Image (cartoon, rainbow, N blue to C red; front, side):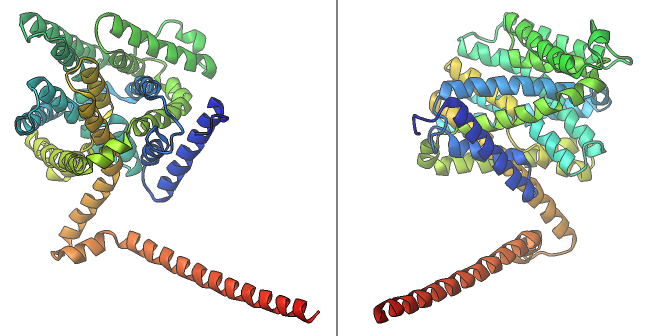
Length: 443
């Protein structure tokens, strides 16, 4: 990039392009998150090179996910989670177990270490809370039975990240899973259940000095930021992930007397952080690595999406959900999520996985997030077409993408008309130029 461009100018250009691509995706009736990831891929160090500091990007992504998960935790209702506690815990547990089984089977043939297989299994098991909630809102299902069970499973996955990160850290430090490690994980899981039980009880938590900041949006926003950072700091000091501490702090605020004011006060911040995090994920993608390993990455991405969809639907039905709920819920959780990025970062830092494996995980996260909305729409439409009795694949495909094909045809006609006008203009300009040259010769 041109060295004369200041950092502020680069930030402005990157933000402008990210917002523009987000608006394009909204116009195409897709989540704007997809546009932010694409912008990051295009503008990253191996793309157009607008942003070149990889370590700074990784730090920005971790900061973004820390604040984002605090705000997501604040919006989640643990009381609603308690109502679907049994199927949510069964589903999340089986998701983790089956993901570990898949990565162990694949790792056996790929030559992965046991530690790498465990860590990658954990990373693949977790879905994206931010994207799933956004998709549920877009299709009007967030407050329905589908939304409740899906969000319940997401909360169970997010709570499970404590033992996951504890185990991931121990894998990198060469510790064996001895009685001390088992005791530490048992205490962590027990404290989580105690937290859920305490926060899920009737009544609201009264936050100190809440009467002083209630009704003052600026102080309220700063107070929420302070609670987020305090939760992250406490979690880090006791040996857990700061990101998890921020998430728990968000859950506490979500069950407090400030929830109704805090959510609208921090909504603009959340919108900004969604852009920052998903843009950062795109910026971390190494396009050279993708170009050299595109076949392997394609296999991984579609394998993860398809296998997770099938397993999620089967597990949800096994947990007692009807097919009408299990089918869309399983598909909507088919991507790899935010905590997977944290797990991969832990694996890289502790040398459980190398940089090549880290790039595979980041690429799978980014591309699964990109594909997930299209996958949901496609599978749901195929499901509807199947009910109409259409069993010819080409006819079914035409039915599924009827609106999009009509849009493409309309666009092609517009391009054709524009081409005719351009050719007409060129011919007219040539005739005018010939006439003028003739007049000059006569003079």
